[in-house]
Amino acid sequence: MTVELIEKKDIGIENFDLKSMVSQIFIPFSDISSQPPDDYIYSGGEKIPFRERHPIFQALILVEFENC
Image (spheres, rainbow, N blue to C red):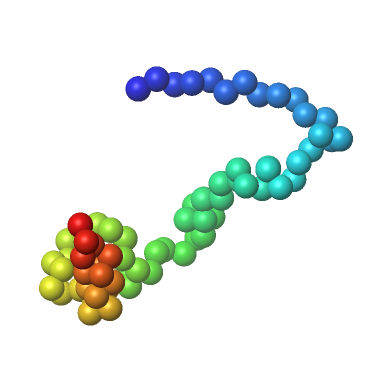
């Protein structure tokens, strides 16, 4: 893996494009919040067998991958 350096350009206020800047903003909401994460939100760490998942989730996954 290589690291590429990105050349920074000094743009003047007359060349400032707010739309392109907003599209590149990254806000780590999990770092901003002082509340612990809710227990009912699936974090991806649990291993839940497919047969124990919610029926709507099962139906969506089966339809999504039926032609694979």
